[in-house]
Amino acid sequence: MINLYISLLMAQIKGQMSYKKSFVLELIGYLVVNIIDLFVIYFIFLKFPSIKGWSMGEVYYLYGVASVSYAIAQLFAESLEKVPELIRTGEFDHFLIRPRSPILQIMPLSFRLNRIGRLIQGAIALSLAFPILQLELNCEKVMLFMIAVFSAVIVYFGLFLAGAAFCFWTIQSSEALNAFTYGGVELSKYPITIYRPWMRRLFLYIVPVGFVSYYPAIAFLEKSDPLGGPLWASYFSPVIAIIFAMVTWLFWKLGVNHYQSTGS
Amino acid sequence: MIHAENLSRIFVHHHTSPGLLGSIQGLFSRTSEEFHAVDKISFHIGEGEFVGYLGPNGAGKSTTIKMLTGILVPSAGEVTVNGISPSRDRIRHSQQIGVVFGQRTQLWWDLPPRDAFDLLGKVYRVDRHELKQKIDFFVEMLQLSSFLCLPVRKLSLGQRMRCELTAALLHQPRVLFLDEPTIGLDITAKEVIRSFLKYLNREKRTTILLTTHDLGDVEELCKRVIVIDRGQIIHDSDLFTLRRHFGHRRLAMFDLEQESPIYLPAYAVEVKREGKRLWIEFDGDQLRMPDLISEISRQASISDLSIQEIEIGRVIKQIYSRT
Figure 1 (cartoon, rainbow over the protein chains, first blue to last red):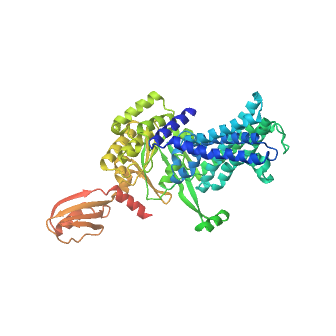
Figure 2 (cartoon, chains in turn yellow, purple; figure 1 turned 135 degrees about the vertical axis):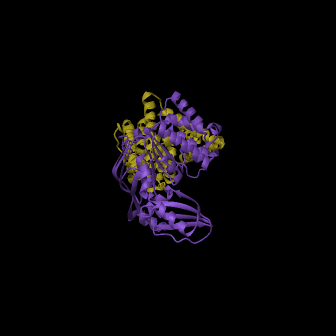
Figure 3 (cartoon, rainbow over the protein chains, first blue to last red; figure 1 turned 60 degrees about the vertical axis):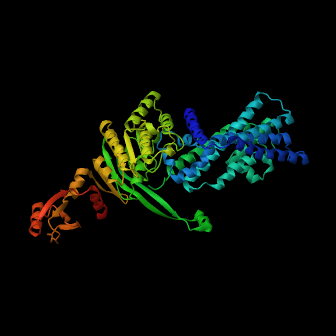
């Protein structure tokens, strides 16, 4: 499976090379735009020492985890945003007549290496967070960090998949769903306690972007949870993430069966 | 090999009023209309058959092919190919079929065919050694060597179609579905593809289902013809029966000594006249050929005459117009 993904990906990159896009320039542009965010956080905390009990270092940590995981998910799953186009042109047909999962075949379709810009930005945020927080890194911390990133990647992946699945009914890409992907990633950059209760609940329990970023972060940062969430919630996030991704996958399957192709 | 039983596909069209307001309204209430693209069709195709699947545009040809290939899920009825249900067991099914859509490409636009073949080898899990042999075989058979390393976007349609065929056959499928494979091709390119398909069907016993608007394809390749119109099968027979079925109509061409009007007996119609040359279509059941000749020779002296079979195209047109 991974073998095929890499082969298809290499083919895609080879094809893209023939247009000679300036990869480095795009990467720098992308990085600059994203780094402005980090300055914004810095200036906010110059005025207020803490926001609802969260310090600058803690917010940088949250921000870093969200950025790194979204960048990873985007790197692999962004091509799923091409699905509406594939459906409209009928090109999706080709993925159905081959003996492999359509998702696996679509994933390498557009691989934008410049998304690494976001990954770098996330890494910078984390590298700012650690010295400020002066936390001792032990095994448990490393594991909590891995759990946080893993769960968030899986949830974002599920969101990309759900967005693609919607298109089997609507044909057009659904802007409404972007509120969850892009909204979700923006939201999870900051502590979920600052949002209104209905929004909090939505992102904790229905689209668990908040859940998988908030609880592992609390445990990592050794904070007490003002929402009174249980301690095991942080270790439970991968399970929540996988369940969420499974549900979106079933939704996708349903969509494929609903596929209508095009005339002629 | 292919069994279809009461196979149907219904599309539901939603009507939305134009404009932004209309699309917002469409979210809450929609009027919908059902369209039976394929309506309870049944047929069986045996192993090694070469079947032409014909019909006018919008008759349901492509919808049928898409159900047989597992792209579309049938609304009702049963279909199996080699005992496998295309939509329920899609992965296993796609390993045993090859598909060519004449209007689209399954190659990679910016990559040379060579790379595409290697990739497809991986997609279909073809053993490396075997893949190389296969590619060499097709390169030789379809004369691909001169453009094997050019990006697909630079190939001519004929070159590309030969590559599409190769791409569809690398995993040695037992059934090949061809949706208008000769569309837009010149005569030489058509000829290459036709003789290759003949070879494939005869030597490799590949079952082939072909849709086309090119009746040359049908006459040269298909031993059996299924005609579909408005979602229903209106004719299914071998080419010979099809011809005989409508073959009581004959076309005779007369060359006369002089240009003169001819009064024809009943059951004969003058279809064309070019100076001294005259084409007459007649019903062979009602009017015997010798009677027609003696009738005409009474009115004018005949210098030459020939009888032609009615082309399959006219036969199929007649079927279309009868329904």
